[in-house]
Amino acid sequence: MSDLSKIVKAYDVRGTVPDQFNESVARALGTAFVEMLRESGDDADRIVIAHDMRESGPALSAAFGRGANAAGASVISIGLASTDELYYASGALGLPGAMFTASHNPAQYNGIKLCRSGAKPVGQDSGLAVVRRRAEELLNDLNAEADGPSRVVTRDLLGDYAAHLRSLVDLSGIRPLKVIVDAGNGMGGFTVPAVLGDQVLPALPLTIVPMYFELDGSFPNHEANPLDPANLVDLQEAIREQGADLGIAFDGDADRCFIVDERGEPVSPSAITGLVAVRELTKFPGSTVIHNLITSAAVPEIIAENGGTPVRSRVGHSFIKAEMARTNAVFGGEHSAHYYFRDFWFADTGMLAAMHVLAALGEQERPLSELAAEYERYSASGEINSTVADARAKVAEVREHFPEATVDDLDGMTARLPDGAWFNLRASNTEPLLRLNVEAPKPDRMASLRDEVLAIVRR
Image 1 (cartoon, one colour):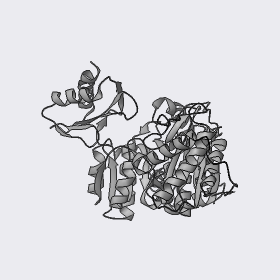
Image 2 (image 1 turned 45 degrees about the horizontal axis):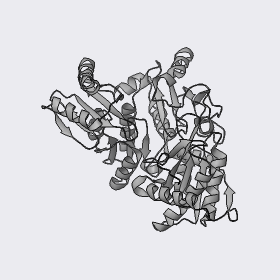
Image 3 (image 1 turned 90 degrees about the horizontal axis):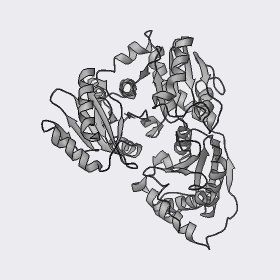
Image 4 (image 1 turned 90 degrees about the vertical axis):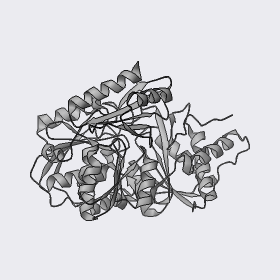
């Protein structure tokens, strides 16, 4: 009996190829996706699909398309694309979409990010569980329907995607900037020349220095995960050696970006959230801005100081996107360098966030380190993972240790101490891990609180 529980996750499909995820599974998921859409009242006559640079992408996405055809849907394939380009296609064309990617996972993985029309996410509670059950039924049915006529058309939307992003952030009048971009052999190497270069649109006052732009899903230079400091080392060295104004690192499917200043020092995603929030609130005064509960306490302070309404959310793109839709928020940011925009169908796009940073830097004369310092107010630990046998018991033990703390349970345990320090301790959804984030007004206080919590978690 087929069981897809190991690859159908909370927000997407992800597994190793071909033992967990192969063309038969992809075909079944294609049929199941279209049937789920119809059952929930969505128009599913057409869908749009894309894939990243992984070797298995073309075959898996084609199999998914055959499954969609068998369910009566025609397919628009935009071929190679970043995840945010697929979201653009879903929004601009008004179609449900399927993006074949495993983001920053190792080369042997592939997966699918599904969305409804208008780039609305599909997760466990919004259709993914139904897709999984129906796909399992199809895989277990020896008499499952054979492939019908192919109804697939190809379309190139890269230029349209680039033009849309340029219409949202005008970079034409900024001062000249030298920018080193590390694509990590991922899809940033495909989209950056179109959006920031002169491949399809007029040149901008940017000198783009490419690093690892060759599309290669085996990731020969480093993992395409810019949140791991080890994957930023090459970019940091290049910035210092070449005197660049900043560096940008994208993950494998280029829906996340990480920013490095002119000294080669990383700029925290919380600072980027604050910076972009201020820019969006200038355009749309009084708007709501979403931040997840791991972002710095500076983020809601900055939002409120600039006339916005900060709304705190659980970690995870499905929660952020749901809160953005509910509140009509103009922008949302996460500690993981996911950034969401109302004028991008509430979807996340690393490229648009990078463009806001370029505009903010290029519209004034200070270096990025000085500009970013305006949005860095506290000392943060970053996320620290600990393997535990019983996460719930450990959280209870930590809670008991801090009776003076004000605690809420929106996502794990967030404890606020009287001196302004705080920490969040939450369990992983997929692994026996507790994730700790600590922030305090001063570095020594952050370090002491971090060590105090870890001593309990790890003993």
